Amino acid sequence: MTDTPIALFDMQAQQALIRGEIDRRVAHVLSSGRFINGPEVAELEAALAEFAGCAHAVGVSSGTDALQIAMMAEGIGRGDAVFLPAFTYTATAEVPLVLGATPVFVDVDPESFNIDLAYLRRRVEAVAKEGRLRPRAVVGVDLFGLPADWPAIEALCAEHGMFALDDAAQAFGAALHGKRLGRWGGAAALSFYPTKTLGGYGDGGALLTDSAERAELYRSLRTHGEGGHRYEVLRTGMNGRLDTLQAAILLCKMTLFGRELEGRSAVAARYRERLAGRVAMQRVDAGMESAWGLFTLRLESAEQRERAQAALKAAGIPSAIYYPKPLHHQPAYRAAHAETGAAPLPVSEALSGQVLSLPMHPYLSEAQVDRVCEALLPTL
Ligand SMILES: *Cc1c(COP(=O)(O)O)cnc(C)c1O
Image (cartoon, rainbow, N blue to C red; front, side):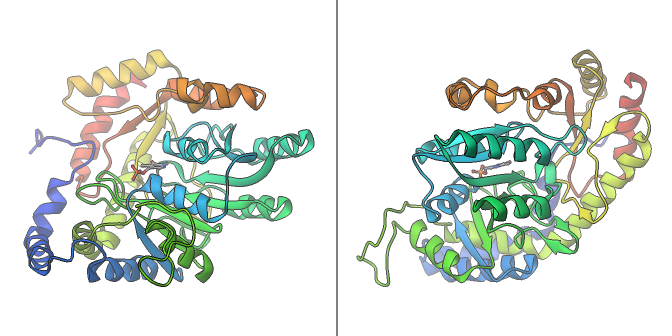
């Protein structure tokens, strides 16, 4: 047993549990021929909304398109400032630029790795005072599955008339003060990329919201801005639908999802117990339930991280660096950062040199978690 391979993410163990049901559901879609807008899409939307406890879910083609549709629905574009953390996945910053808006990078908290509220407030006030760009939206990211400080983000957005968009791509299933993501901010964007907490067998995503008007706009925008009937075009939209086959597969996975979140949480608890006092881990505040999309450490230095990663590799254990570069250092975003004053982002820069993500999936055994910790501890 000691040398059962350990995967960073494990989609095979899960598939073995539901393979029969997936085959049955996929065969049903193949026979029905309803590959676009089949009944499985609405069925999945109902299941997502019920799980999150929100009023509406709208299936879309990816997490990136979910962010784009949400921003299009607010009319975000040229002259608008969209505030987002510099330490996140590229999609968060890409979307405002695609729409002609300007991303404004915000530093993150050194312990939670999520957006730093004091820094955010300073940047919003500075942009408002300068008057060149309109502060229009804050995209809070729930990094690695941990909810951002949504009550504070919502309050700041209300104060400045900004839209609060939750990039929950890594965090479906997480909750804050008893409310799951999907009920925080004006809308939450989910991704069903295969390695996310709820992952499909291809690309997919969804928007969750309590607003009926927004949900209706999202449905229109994902289908080329169509109106009440098929060839009426009310607004500029996109082809952003979730396809029926992915919805059918995700419906099978939803039957395991609650248990899988518990599994992730048990794995995280074991890591935290074994590594306590030896290395910095993402801080989880009272009232927060992470979805544990990733389990990420903060080492003391790049050198220590290199030693840790080498020791894991020698023991046959995969690890990964999310993210090796903060977004303002990416060639694609340097110009936007310069245009908005190139404010220093020291925590995002430090984290990118120090973070390391360990294997995290619901099917890791206690013994496997212990093997990871035993390989790691001598380097800490
Ligand atoms: C994965 C991810 C996205 C994009 O989701 P896709 O489905 O891959 O388009 C957006 N934001 C964050 C934070 C992500 O991790």
